[in-house]
Amino acid sequence: MSTTTQATDTVLSVSNLTVCFAGAPANVVDGVSFSVQRGKTLAIVGESGCGKSVTSMALMGLLPDTAKIAARTSALLDEALLGMPDERLLDVRGNRMAMIFQEPMTSLNPVFTIGEQIAESVIRHQGLSAKDARQRALQMLEKVRVPDAAQRLDAYPHELSGGMRQRAMIAMALANDPALIIADEPTTALDVTIQAQILSLIANLQAETGTAMILITHDLGVVAEVADDVMVMYAGRVVESGSVKTLFDDPQHPYTIGLMGSMPSIGPREGRLATINGRVPTPAQMPTGCRFAGRCPFVIQACREARPPLLELSPGHFAACIRAPLEQHTGASA
Image 1 (cartoon, rainbow, N blue to C red):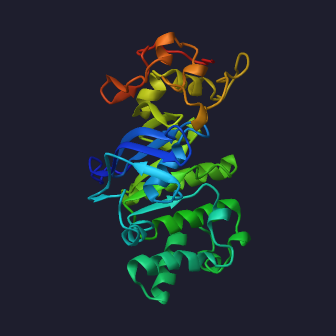
Image 2 (tube, rainbow, N blue to C red):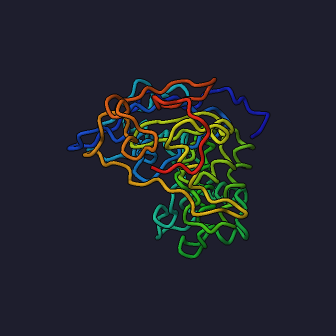
Image 3 (cartoon, rainbow, N blue to C red):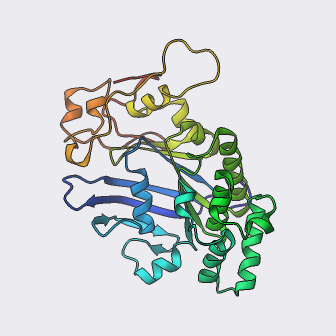
């Protein structure tokens, strides 16, 4: 990350965020708190169904009306996000905060060219003329290293490869110099080589602009490469958080340990990769105590009876496990 940015500046601060859908007996996001600093990347990690994307969609105002959202605080720079009037949210979304979606083919409009879609955002938020907006779109495609950018400007999404479409999405997200970018599994649909290029591109652009980023992923390899801090979620709750180095060197929640143990590695390996048996509970099946208790290899009766608090085990390192601190384990399975 760039050393020229003031990394201590808080761009986004969220405290006690909860999300519940109509008819669901339990919160799908339950008391989540975190902050993101200027020029830094917070990775939100967990399996499908753990609440990662719902958290980001709640902050972006993209959840349906059936979602009930509440938070003690949810501030983007100097503005509260939750409860923001719709007109103001339209001004903020795509401008002060932007999102890179998982699959650009379903996020880009197939009947408009790439240049038109980038220019539309610039015209909406910066009030540029159509000519100047087109020039800005060209500059952004060049910045994200799209080859033959002038020609690609008039291409439709289906005429680009997956990697080029993702670059176009990044160009659109950065076109208005947002303070915060939310990247939701931005490399899932790409092959390994293109994935590495996109991650490097995002990191370089972030270093240049000082933009804060939330990276939503299930891939711990990606986390190790680009993130500064990590928040591990399970069944809508934060189970562990800290710096990347801390979590990789000393994971202290059984779920985090299980995720680490299931990571493939380069070189010889003895036996099969570890797995975490079972699956994330649905909102209708949420247990009373620790939501990971039914899959945990270290579970005791007390785990099933009360929600474990998120305790600070060392400076900046938090874990929600009544048995923490745990000894270092690898390959834990339930």
